[in-house]
Image 1 (cartoon, rainbow, N blue to C red):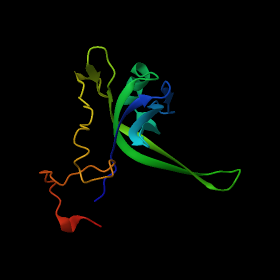
Image 2: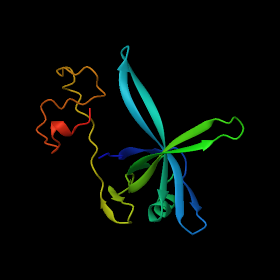
Image 3: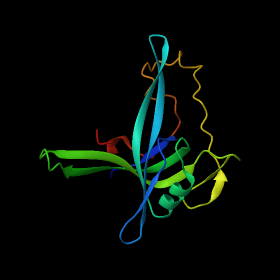
Image 4: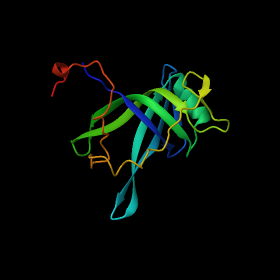
Length: 163
């Protein structure tokens, strides 16, 4: 068994571009930025990562209609890497993107959001991390969550883990 699932919450870098396939299927492409913050030499630093997003069908049409540069969006989907041969250099080229299956508009004036089916619902809360207990953790790599006291049972037995 394998899993290819991505969840991103970020802001659009530019307005989405809508294309139609020859069979009439909508395809919308855009990029979103996600940022991580850390402290280096006593200064707060920001690291921004850009993600290419591709939506198909009704979600593509809704994205083109409602999303604009700077808007925050939730994307759930899968990673896909395209490969092609560069005819000028003869080398293989690669581009990685996220093919979205679910989209939620996070930015809205009334605190609601629209999902990729066009339904309105309450926007999820994305609380700021609790930084007050970071000093007491033994985990010095703040990119890796500390689940040592977690009571979550994933249902996966140790012998099922492939590594």
